Length: 152
Image (tube, rainbow, N blue to C red):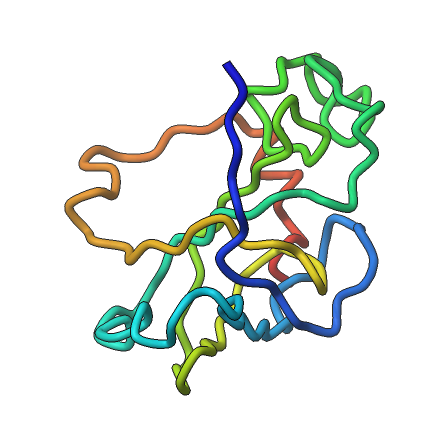
């Protein structure tokens, strides 16, 4: 069964390339599409963090992988695509929790969004602590190494 989604907004920032690291200084502006009224953002500035669901529109759909060494690093284990956050995914959907900086009309500015300039936004949701993990987050050592410079 096909699923049809229409973007609700787009990302504007200084990041043009698809490289993996050094996202920490990038500030992104997210502007709602013309068919979405600015009122859709009413109340959003009462939240400190948002979940941004976006579409990897600039990845090559022929390069979808289902397993492999993260970033091609043979020192890390061969794991399935659902055990990593690689952009070459079956449905090309990204999800990041961001820090909301401000809202003005039909625009918001956020920090810690790892989406390049022009990326279509599929949905925006407020982060509520009741939806965050209750227990301690567990992850393998290789993923900690992989993320070392991600937000640097």
